[in-house]
Length: 224
Ligand code: C5P
Image (cartoon, rainbow, N blue to C red; front, side, top):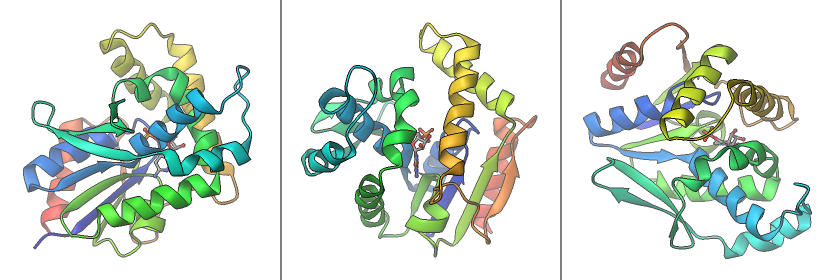
């Protein structure tokens, strides 16, 4: 019987890698909610942001109705690529420029409200694996399986750095480490922080264990 699987945790804990594999194995739909926050951020960077990186929250709210987000499944990649108003932005939303701004845009309540509604709709049928920060707490508080992934800051920065390098990005490790720390701070300290471990979530600390091990653990939990 198909269920809903909510995977939450800090960035670069290997959430998406494992979630994608699990979705393939179980024949589930995978939804990367971080991609949605990133796409909204990219749109706002183009339309609303001032050159110094500041923005008017009211302007963000006014632009929201003009954003259409869709995942189009790519057979070769094996997951859905993010489309922003019919433009494939899968690559662009992963750039550091976007990573550096996303937490601020994700903190706007109206942005969260819009995306949470869309996510609820996307997962209304069972057989969905959704990864993010607030899936087990806000989007699907009734999910049958909730996983909360953690890893040390340095471990996550190393992962992110390797990932960016492998894509040919010119980045410094120090910059990546700072970005991971900053996002953790913004994501976890604000009043309505999206990143909270649901009471009934299973915590997996991925520091020092292989992706394969994490995957096997999760597969076991999903099949239970
Ligand atoms: O998962 P990823 O690192 O791509 O998410 C990018 C950012 O989007 C996070 O740092 C966080 O600010 C925001 N986010 C969120 N709620 C989610 C998923 C992502 O606020 N469910």
